[in-house]
Image (tube, rainbow, N blue to C red):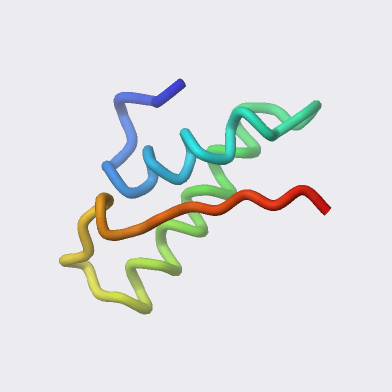
Length: 60
């Protein structure tokens, strides 16, 4: 489920990864997805829209 306090990109990444988190806490996943969102914005620029990013989760 999405967290309404997150920015749209962070929220999209969190919503994609959260169902696959297993025993990890929600706070841990929120921190990791925040780091991912930061790196994506850093590399692509701050004008990047959430709908321009797709998330693929692969179970290995």
